Length: 285
Image 1 (cartoon, rainbow, N blue to C red):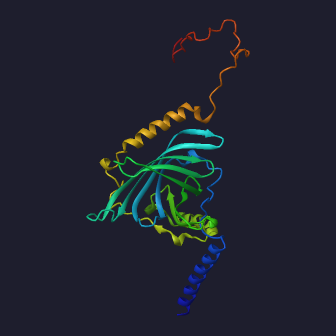
Image 2: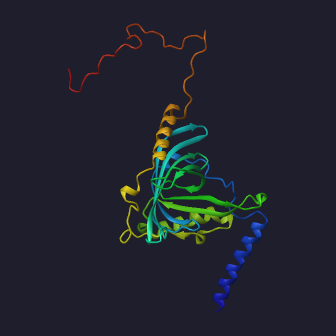
Image 3: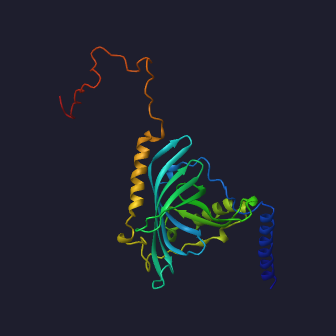
């Protein structure tokens, strides 16, 4: 009985403390929560499996994300365009089925300050998109990514707090294969990032993983066909980053009357534009 009372008292203390800090604007997820500064964006590329989450009103299983680099928009500040695809099984999405495939197709600008600025299409037949801003609170690139997004701000703008935050914890290893040491490492990483905002790992849910009774990948090929507007946006982004010269400014044209920037002519060298002699083939005399 004493133990139960102690546990109850601890829970009450945490709740009261969180409420007090919220009321003094020292606790809760800020609307302008900073991401991980110095993010090495291209190291984020590849497959990530959802391990824990908070998505109010949605419970999912076998959730997976893939980031593909499209190109660098700018180098200073660093902005890298990504193709971001997600698949999961969502429970009770359709009244006649226990779970349904839920694909999301996104283009996203990942920044060196740890932000993911996305445009998302949520079905293969979607014609309309929605935009979202995610903060990458922490990643080590090889094991864990911790991300948050605000769904509903507090009505009192002076608090600058989010009433309904979302959280995602992704890992490079499919969660059923995680060992105890890695799970402990991820838990510690979550608490280091969230405790300062009066949240903890216990506030998150474990993503359901069952690849024996439920499909993985979650979506059939026919369900994962990208919508036409998404495909068009991806092609447009590719052209934008190619035209942007890898994030570097294109060389400017010389001003009228400025000295020529052409390389000096070297005696015996081929004239500019002239074909160069073919390189000798391996084994040739």
